[in-house]
Image 1 (tube, rainbow, N blue to C red):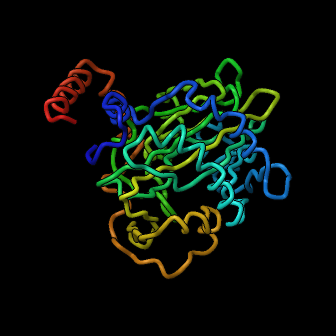
Image 2 (image 1 turned 60 degrees about the horizontal axis):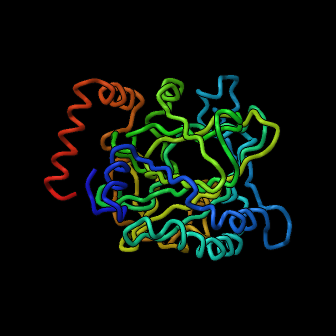
Amino acid sequence: MTGPAMFRDPEHERRFRRDGYLAFPGLALGVLEQARSIYATAPTGEAVPVGTYFAAEEAAADRTWRRRMAPGEQWRISTDECLPEERVRIKEAMAPLWAEIAEPLFVDYHSVINSFLTKYPGPESFLPLHQDPTVVDERVQRSVTVWLALDDISRARANGPLHVLPGSHRCGHEWRGTRTDPSYLTGLEELWGRAVAVDVSAGDVLCMDSAVLHGSPPNASDGPRGAIAGVFAPRSAQLVHAVGIEGDQVEVWGVDEDFYLHHSPGSLRKQLPTGYPVIDVTPRADPPTTAEALLAQQHFERTWRGRQHARLARAKARLLGR
């Protein structure tokens, strides 16, 4: 990984570049009740919109959830259900909270996308291992997903804790957007075996590189659990959206914040807007993030040679002042 520093704290930067995620216990405790209030109330005073079911055809197949490629129907995200004006309201409501708990962590980052995530009880509440959409050119800069737990979520509670595949953000490079199919889908069940569970308490914050693979098993408890996620990007970055075209290529569109307020993954699948400049046409995956490559990386980093390689890389980074 290259590019400018993301975190103000050099130790946070080092660990984040290595693992692709960082946990900050209790970071949002001071704004937890305010965050729960924003999550719980829509402009109409009704319950927060939880999103429509958009699972792909593969997700309906009779297979173990660890092989499934799209979210189960008991896992919901607010983005697709919200109207643009609701997305604006949520962004404005979350802005002071992010300014207090998240923005101080980063070197001049700002929130671009806000989502409410709800995992209802039941076997169809799983979220497959996946990478979040590309919102900046990751060849030169990185975006970060900030995930705020509204409930205690853990393996002991069996309510579907988040799992992360450490270091997966460093394996290959793929553009992720509309009509872009990931290369790792054929090996999801094996990848789940390498994922690390991240147990959290309400008010904890988890930061993830947008390219790190993450997901969560079904919620086997008797109640729903909620979280709020924000995608953060450098203020200096050109925001982008990738659209798959023929020949396994993508068009990279130059977009702005309004793009992500007026369009959602679901609406973009139905109809693409016009008028956005194409700033690049490039291979979708170069190199691809295949399951085989991810498993090989995980194996290498667990070996003595891999650990020595990591130590040398850290020493080199310190010498270069990164």
